[in-house]
Amino acid sequence: MRFISDTSFDGISEQLFTLDGVPGVLWTPEGAVGTRPLVLMGHGGGQHKQAPGIATRAHRFVAECGFAVAAVDVPGHGDRPKDEELDRIATENQARAEAGAELAPLIAGFQALVSRRTVPEWRAVLDAVQQLEHVGAGPVGYWGVSLGCGLGVPFVAAEPRVRAAVLGLGGALASAEAAARITVPVEFLVQWDDERVPRHQCLALFDALASAEKTLHANPGKHAEIPAFELDSALRFFARHLG
Amino acid sequence: MRFISDTSFDGISEQLFTLDGVPGVLWTPEGAVGTRPLVLMGHGGGQHKQAPGIATRAHRFVAECGFAVAAVDVPGHGDRPKDEELDRIATENQARAEAGAELAPLIAGFQALVSRRTVPEWRAVLDAVQQLEHVGAGPVGYWGVSLGCGLGVPFVAAEPRVRAAVLGLGGALASAEAAARITVPVEFLVQWDDERVPRHQCLALFDALASAEKTLHANPGKHAEIPAFELDSALRFFARHLG
Image 1: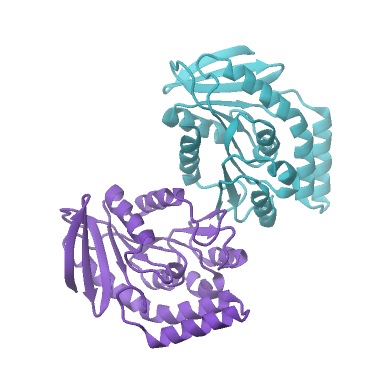
Image 2 (image 1 turned 90 degrees about the vertical axis):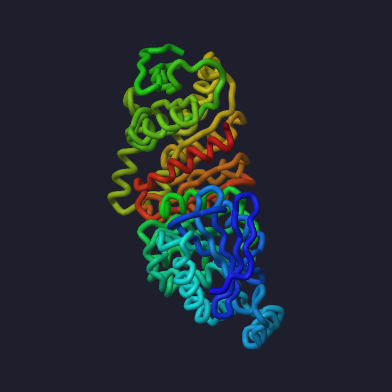
């Protein structure tokens, strides 16, 4: 793990790092000492580790809960090099969707492919970050919707350190099998008018989770229109399960 | 409005009253002075105005938000006299259900009948309670699930003073038409394994609400098994919209 930069703003420290070629970011309370809960965040498709939807949430997790938050770029995203295989598949998928193919199976196939790389990458990030004195081996949470759900479900299923997860905007087609291995508490977001993931696919993924405590929050609006009050809810969910 | 008793416990004043033969209860912070938000609560079938599910929630609304909370007995429930017509229909429905009839249409018909009485009764209670110096004409919320949803949907649709409502465990069969006239923010509870109201009926009622802000919270478990954290959520919902 190699640190590239270390800046602070508004009481929050932001450290950029790379780990075996994976670019990442770690946010912690400025001057933090000792073990604390850690939330790993997975970004959406076409986004990156410091996209506004990630950074805004991370800042609140750090500022209001005192957590550490880590995020890394998914292959082919952010500061990672172009990935020819993924690029080719993405281009093919786009062409198929424009030719009238159903979007959900294409997304599902793509996410399954990417998750074979991200699950071990994210587990390695967890190993490295938990070695740091100001993070330590505290309870771990995961937050990710859309692509962050498609990659998050197999990650949470594989990683026993994760004790609670916020997931959503993802369908059963991509993730039902791994979801059936998840037993930790989950808060699951559905956009009622999602134009990318059919509603019944989202409900079926919620259904597939084996967690005894799982709670579905559905709100009107399209894929990208999660209302602001769901961030308040995610904060309280993590505070309850990791705090 | 005639007050029958006035007791206090743990900083909460409980006043029993009757209004035109309807027995009710009003909870307020002890020593409360001046206008405050008021939450009207509708109890479930076979329950009453001071049933544990009502009283526990009311106490937290009063203690943590400083609200006033009112609840009244539904016809044929609590301290109200036996109602021969409703008793007869309930008995007939039970016999039909035991003979294999679908439960949801029977519940829907019964609730429609009862709501023709409760809507004007509850509006009169609102008039009277808002005249009291320690309640006043502040913002009004409604909380009711199951029968409290079946009766609550037509009430919220009819009563412009209600600014926000927690509803749920109810189906579209009973309430879709009135739900389409509701435009205030709604938090809507669904029990994912509800043995009384089919899941698709619950989702369809959520769908029918005309509210721009509506949020569905679904949790595993049967009709009566709403998890405790949903009360925390209802508190924050009302604090956000009435506070």
